[in-house]
Image (cartoon, rainbow, N blue to C red; front, side, top):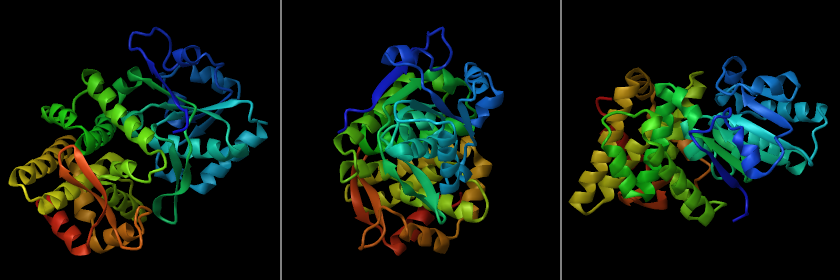
Amino acid sequence: MHPKPKYIPILAESANGAFKDAWDTAEQAPPDWYIVDDFFQNNNNIPWIKDVHAQGRVYWLKAGESSKTLAEVENILAWLTQNNANRQQSVAVIGGGTVLDAGLFATSIYQRGVQKWSLPTTLLAAVDAGIGGKNGVNFMGFKNYVGTITQPDFVVTDFRVFESLDTLHVLNGWMEMAKHALIADPALWYSMKQFESVPPTKTVHTLIRDAAAIKKRLVEADEFESGLRKTLNFGHTVGHALESAAASRSENLSHGIAVGLGMMVSLHWSADQAVDHRIQSELVDAAHCIKHWLNLAVPAYVEIAVNAADLDTLWAFMEKDKKNDTNGVQEVRLTKIGQAEWNQLLSRSAFEISWSSAHRGV
């Protein structure tokens, strides 16, 4: 794997502003330019951003799938060009998954790449989207169809910024943590399972670190997704289809909810193929656990997403998923908790049966 990135954790007891210790820790000058979630334009979570903005060095990017477009990336590139940004300078991208996706894609192609800082501000970004170098935008209604795998130079994690996240944003990250545990770490899964509901982030720092470590390990083993890294797509074939279908209705479905609903389908599908009854039971139990977390945290969102789902529409999006090959729709299957197989062919009939099993009664 490329020697980048350098991972920099910020200690919770730091007295400096969010992320500010990163430059000294990395023995680097502060970034020259900043692409920042516009949430922080009127929020004091990262107070020093206002000073940088006053110097004209911030591009404010709206979070959400609507910003993951080639047009928005072109706007970022134009801003960098107009400000005479060059390859001897560095750019920090600060925000959640969608901001990192679009911002890091732009910095990966601007002048064929400048030095990049990835500063995730959501739990989901810290454990998943901000790790691994994947970046890009949606295209013609399909998720993440255009992009690159380009590692940032530095990834900075500051647990303090997660403490102000609302329930939905914590749930988004918790779902990706569950995915990491289910495909690679039974101990982490059983630790997470002990929680009746999604816990506050400040109580599970160790679990967050463990989940992020899984993503780092899989990326280091297979940076360009030729094999093992594909297991990270568990639940995402259905999940991305749900997001694309929602977008086609001009609705915004949270990534964590979509992936959670997708994992439930994949777990039932995996259970249907298991021979060992104990493994079958554990996989179905995991699906019920995810369903319980979702229904307890965001019942209205779940009900709307499931009731609006049209299987013909979902399957059409699944058939266009970029992970597929000439054989058809590819999915990740669990052979047991903590063990996953990639490039498993999912048939239309199996999808329908598993969807029904997973989402019967919402």
